[in-house]
Image 1: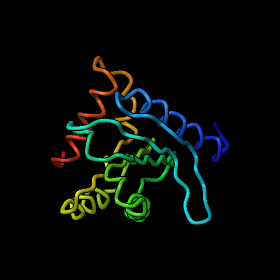
Image 2: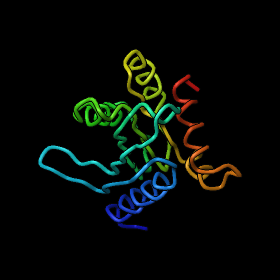
Image 3: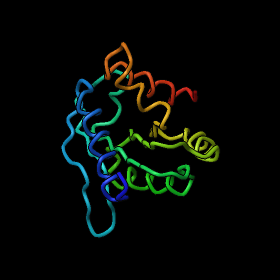
Image 4: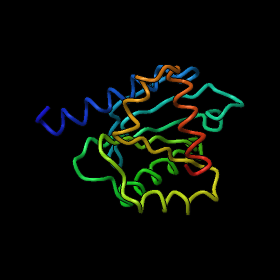
Length: 150
């Protein structure tokens, strides 16, 4: 797709479809905009007691960019999650490209609080639907990996 807006909307849709396949996740909105923020995917999480169970609301941000996602975008996503009345403790930052090294360092600094941003880059994204495992198992695995810092 050549059109940047369509390209971004297609990635949002892909992320929404993937997350809708995770047991206990219900995608409730895609492409939400208000006067101050834009959110790509909003998920109601019904999981309890698993690696995915710590957050009743999950946000996902989709970046279909040529350039790597940097700390500025990470910080903006963290602010979006924080402004959800402490209910969005888990988020997925997804890009078709890659993340700068600074993004991982910044997430490590944020690890003292009870929130988590899981990074899904262009190399990891296709494995979510190509794996022999279910999408739920794959999302659990990448969430656990992000928790322990791998």
